[in-house]
Amino acid sequence: MVSTRDRDETVTDVASRLRLAIARTARRLRQQSGTELTAALTAALASVEQRGPLTPSELAEAEHVKRPSATRIVARLEELGLVERAADPADGRSFVVAITGEGAALLRSLRKRKNAYLARRLRELDAGEVQTLERAAGILERMLDAEPRG
Image (cartoon, rainbow, N blue to C red; front, side, top):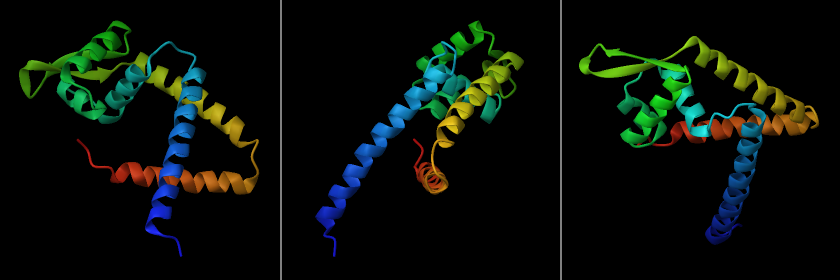
């Protein structure tokens, strides 16, 4: 029988190994992107694409950053031609941000390059390992979906 203390140590060890593996994987994927766009800009652009036109406040909430940071991110994305501003139909004093065709094309390209990189690496594994990673992906998705927002 496994004691609570032993289980806690095991969970902590797994958490440490997962954190490192996820961080290293994320870094490798960023290196595959072929763009100088920062992770924060890429994530914000993806949020704008996924959630539709957003106010800067909504983007800040989605990205878990302060409103001034979101405003700076929007300004940079706009400068790069990846998003465009429009008047907020609900509040004439504010604006919403929508992705441009160029922004959507960039995200498609980034995703394609990163998926190709991972697919090449997965092809080096045996079928059982790929199945294990498929299960792990589902577990990680479930963990993230269950995470409280805020």
